[in-house]
Image (cartoon, rainbow, N blue to C red; front, top):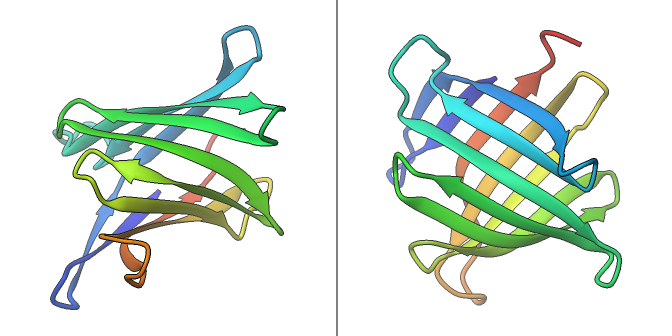
Length: 135
């Protein structure tokens, strides 16, 4: 993946990374591992997401954990049109929205946004442009 970090002053920083997705818990959940930058460089982010579908809410319970940065989030994810949108709170107490857009069989665009309260506008913090390298 290629990553763009949006800094508060309007500047951006680019990076690379890798993501690994797979079914776990006998097909009852999806787990992914996000690594930035791409190995073998030392990781600045190395985390995992567990997504478990709940038919009672017609959505996914999502748990994110990045022990390198002590960053944790709980979200609920649902399809919104052609996108997947996950909304919840992060470990800093901020509202977080993570969107998977432009989804194809071999790629997607992930947009990470945050805000302090429901009345604040969403601010983009990260974008990931992922593409399959090993089908």
